[in-house]
Image (cartoon, rainbow, N blue to C red; front, side, top):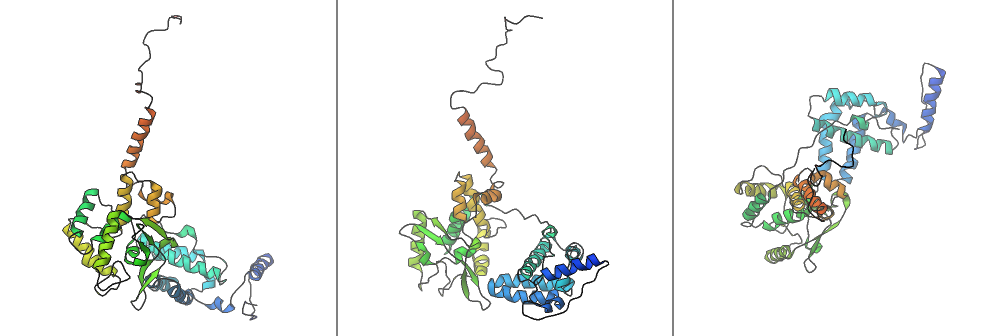
Length: 360
């Protein structure tokens, strides 16, 4: 009997009585939401799962998952029944069917399939996830690009000539993500006490309307501001007409769109500042690396970036600031030398033979 109350007959086959008993025992222990799932194909299940994704996630997440399901998964293993899908099917799919694809594509396919089948397990449609963790394709993330101090100053000099200086300045000064900056509202900025609160990130629904979602990691954070940043924000608020709840808005008072920011504002700035290829997100990386290179405490950098732990910040940025180890070595060297000059390797050791030792 399934969880809906329907009674159905199942048949178990095996080469021995013991093998049949083992299969029957497994069927008895396995809760099944509906026996209809036994006939459901993977494609059919994924179509239902995508409807849930559309409700619970941002539109871009749904679009990305849907594209991966339709382009890669359904065409190769979609006809296999969900209940019959095996780890070998998944391994052959990732390693043979998709062998001509790049490692990043194969990794994304794995992530979507693994996530979808995890929810099938949670819904008691299957007992275990056949998309095993060991099947995850390896992919080395591309190293990010960080601005040097001189490049950052050049970019800010160019930005100062435009109406978007504050946006670029805050990106470098706070390390906020693009969506967090575009989703910044005046009611989360406390100019009197010189701080802002990162409470949301800007997204757009299927109808093209702006919506606010929780920031990455679902963690709100406070970022203290310098008096210079406060002065810039006050100037921004007083110069905006019409009055908008958004700190960064278009001419109609609506939040700025990502595409407009990148193609109409950011890329022309890079060209004018004679800076090579750079993502807007790399301003966040630049903020972190410049802060660490200036000797900022790793815990402070972690809190401003909104990372879950200082370890994560170190893992991401330690290699990007190679001078940190040299500075640490110099500081430790000065500490060890605090009580006087250091002796050389053989300095202070007498070359004369010990008179008390017998000469052989």
